Image 1 (cartoon, helix red, strand yellow):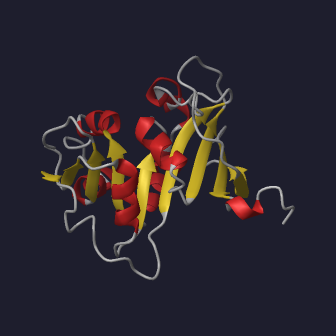
Image 2 (cartoon, helix red, strand yellow):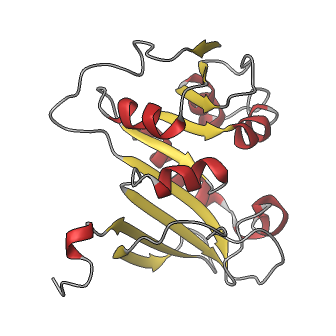
Length: 205
């Protein structure tokens, strides 16, 4: 409900011994498209996926998003009902934007600071996982800054036109596959990755 100014206490707490994990999760088509997933992923998103999404959300201490995701979600969830809607409306949320003046969605703070610096500071505050949905400009910024600790891709068996996951100009980064299996509804597959430390790239270890 308020704007978080530079150096605000909720983002600039002293560093702790263990950082919060930043988990990014996205729906992706067979040809690597992530744009407008509601248009093509809906038929595959059933009760199993809904239950899993709720479990992931319950493990998370806060949700991070750019303005585009905020405008999409804030237009959908405040009026929705059910366990998922109740949890996402009640949990702490941060929207990173230099143009949004205020957030009407409950428990949402607007952060105008540099996203990479602000998220790095937030990771060193107490709490559960930080969850990021999708991979827009904000998600790419976190990727390029090396702030993503776990990446989960749910592969939807469709080929569509749209924005690709890996955007032009993105910094190259290596990832280690740590989990692979069927999705939570028929037809889906889930791939889980963690970043490879720079010193391990090309080392064979």
